[in-house]
Length: 145
Image (cartoon, rainbow, N blue to C red):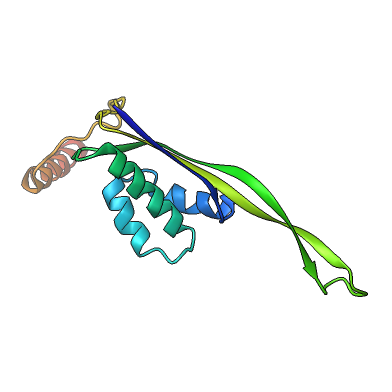
């Protein structure tokens, strides 16, 4: 089942929020909260709040994973900075806001990876590797002579 939360008009720019969201996107929600607690970026606070909200929406589920974290642009508030242009004029600027949409799922998704002969890894004991190398060296000496 999916659990959704949408936080609108967060007073942080979308670019700053995306940097923090990319950092925790691959984690599970509980470890993401731990990471955000020690992140020095100011955008970590509203993102942590949104994650706590979606966890509360999910209830007491043990296995949760992020299905998606979306950071979109919100409204832009038009403001003027007075005194910077001289002669009593003001310079306009826009305060950007963001929307956060988080979707959690309790379904476990296993990713299948293609295994080829080149990437196939087998566990071998170190003693066996040493014996194989010794045998190779002896065979080379016999071939040369």
